[in-house]
Image (cartoon, rainbow, N blue to C red):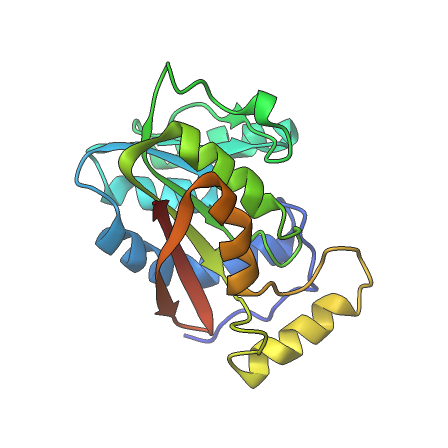
Length: 216
C-alpha cells in the first residue's frame, strides 16, 4: 500500500501533518510499549494532542488505564471523540498539564502511575521541557515506574542518519525558537537533577528512538 504524501510540517495537534505522522508511527511505538508497559496499572500520556495514539494503544492493553493530558484544552473534545469512536472504556477524560508549570501537575496523593509516555514533542519543544517531565515523573511515578519518550534525536552531537539531518534542516528553516532535533545527552542532563536517569535507548523504524527514563 502506497504511503500518503506528507503534508507540510505543522506542529498544531489537530493539523493534517500531525495526523499523518501519528498514523505512520503508531505501530512501531505500540510494539515498543508492549515491551515496556506492565500488564496492569495506570499510564499517563503527556502532550496527548488529538488523541490518536492513546486511543489506538488502549485496546491492546485492556488491564491498563490510560490518562490523556495536554496543556491545550482545545484538543480535549478530539480526544473524547476518538475515545467514543473506538469505545475505549480504559481511556479517562483528559486533564490539563502544563510541563512548564508544576502547579498544574497531578497530585501524587491521589494517584501514582506505572508509566508515562510522550510522543513527538521535542522537535518543537525546548530541552527544558524534559526538566518538567522528569520533575513530574519524580513525583507521580511509582518507584519502579518508567518514562518513555519517542521521537527523532541527535546522539552525542551528531545526526544518526542523513534523513534526520535533512528533517532537522527543514524544521530549522522555519526559524521558530526552540524548533529542531534535540540531543539525547541534553535530555539526559535536564532529567538528572530530579534523580531521573536514562535507562535505555530503543531504536525504532524511520530513524526514531524511544528513550526510557527511570528513577535512580
